[in-house]
Image 1 (cartoon, rainbow, N blue to C red):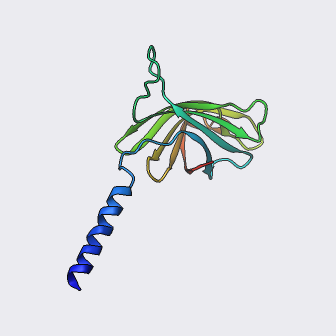
Image 2 (cartoon, rainbow, N blue to C red):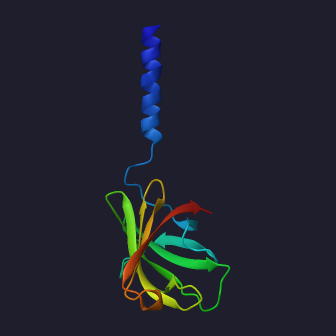
Length: 152
C-alpha cells in the first residue's frame, strides 16, 4: 500500500511539473483588458503583439512585447500610449509619455511619464506616473496605481 501511495504521489508531482508554466514564460499575444484603480472615466485595452527585429522577417525576439493602448469608450482628444515591454527577472516593463496622464480637478490634463511593470505569470503589476508640475502649479511628484491584465 505504501508503495502505491508513493508511486501515485510521484506521478502527480511529475505531471504537475510538466504542465506548470515556465518561470520566465513569454506573454501570450492578443488583447487584454486593463483593470486598474487609476481611471474613473474610461477603461483601456492593450493590444500585445510581437516585437519586430529591423531587417529580418518572422524573427520575434523572446521576452519582448509591443503594447498599444486604446481607451474605451474612445474620447476624442484622449492620448493613446504604448511601448516596448521587455522581460527581465520575470517582470515585463515599459515606459511611455502620456500627454494627459495627470487629471486635475476642474481643470487641465497634464503630461506624465508612466512606467508599467507587471509579473509575467500573474499579469498583475503597478504603474508609476511621474509629473514635472502638479495640479495648480504644485511641485513634481509620482502617483502609483495597481493594475491587472485579463486576456480578452
